Amino acid sequence: MAAGIEEAGRFAALHIQAYAVHERTACLFRRRARHLRDHARHRPGPPSAGLDARPRRLSAIRLIYVNALGNPEGDGPGGIFILDCESFDVRGRWEVDRGPQQLAYDGWWHLAYDTLVTSEWGTPDTFEDGLVPEILLGAKYGRKLHFWDLTRRKHLQEIDFGDEYQLVFELRPAHDPTKPYGFVNCVISLKDLSSSIWTWYRDKDKWAVKKVIDIPAEPAHADLLPPLLKGFGAVPPLVSDIDLSMDDRFLYVSCWGTGEMRQYDVSDPHKPKHVGSVHIGGIARRTPHPNGKRFAGGPQMVEISRDGRRVYWTNSLYSTWDEQFYPGGLPGTQVMAEASPGGGLNLARDFWVEFPDGYRAHQVRLEGGDCSTDSFCYPSA
Image (cartoon, rainbow, N blue to C red; front, side):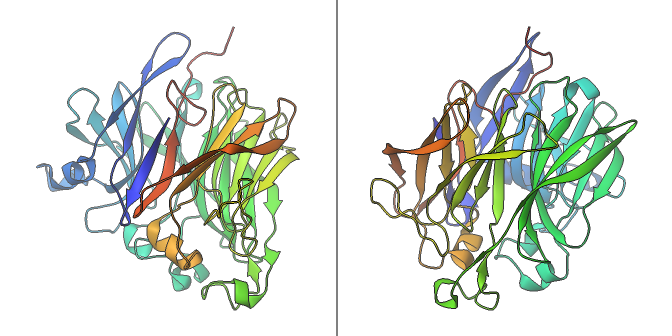
């Protein structure tokens, strides 16, 4: 098990997930690239290459695809740049024709449909110093999905969720490559502070989206709220990550604000059923771990073992955002829940990982593969 560590608001280590495609599965190997951001920022090349900085997700088929949120100056556009998977040399920008796309965040693919999907957060200058209320309330953060021709590297379709829905984040396509659907979370609604989960799917010759889960904000006394939320009298769920089990049956939803990990049966991706939940941490709830220890923050980056029996998560979103929503401090912590085969979650009392002072826990990767990094070209026999 390896966890990415965020130190002093910057990622000190990034895990490169490189997928070498074989007949039935995608073999995963990892290398650590501490110098990646500087390499992308300073490598010589023509100005037209437009290499992105602020690397976010890294994955590859023969090449390494790096999702990045902006250019070296902190402005847009965000997008994808490519590294050689042997030398780690920067090959250049992935997009040949980016169309209207400007904002970026996550990226994933439907290999059997020759389609890449990307989501949106914002440019680095709009989030690195914390959430900017004026940008949020002005509906200027990301709210779109983009669909691309994976082979031709060309933008095909944009789906706008509308002004109400801000921060369209994590992409989780079905692992079965014959299934052209996936899930994405929207962190916050400007209408009522709720979070939502959407399914994207193929509708004839186009891609479409449908909201399938609403998670409401929870009322809370102002004394329990950070300055940013005191005027609202409620805690938004702030769904910041999701993960899909390897058999595409269970979707896990991290409610970083309200301190809850939710489990949904998504056997029918258009009609999810809420089948499990545990509370830990939270802005107002502040639920301790079963071992009695304080869990600062809430469930954030989530990872599932390949057999679906263990669900791990950490508690840090982004250091400047941590300080806005959890001003009392957020020591790095990782916990685990045991998942029942038919649905249901229980926190493991004896699993508790504390990070050294000054370090925060973010991305989780499991040795031998896991459910958010393994990618497949062919269905199981």
